[in-house]
Image (cartoon, rainbow, N blue to C red):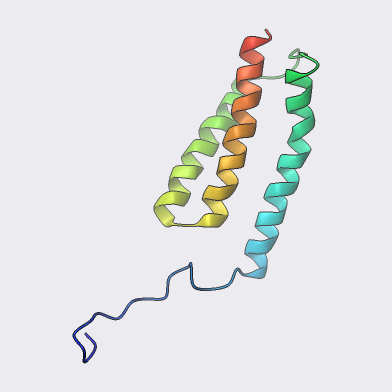
Length: 101
């Protein structure tokens, strides 16, 4: 305890700047999401779902949801913010496959 009776707080991840590696992770997360947009387009606009695997995209969706929970538990924005985008992208493809089959 400090002399004033308050407990010292450990420096949180929120207070420190992002490392170079974290910046690269964030950039690649955005880049790979952008690269996934054509698949969403094909499923929703072209309504072509032949060759698009419901099992694979369903697994990606479950994985993104699990990583989202993990990121929240760890209070790691690099993980959970990226997962929000991935959940949206993966869910769009899964729902599109189901609707357009």
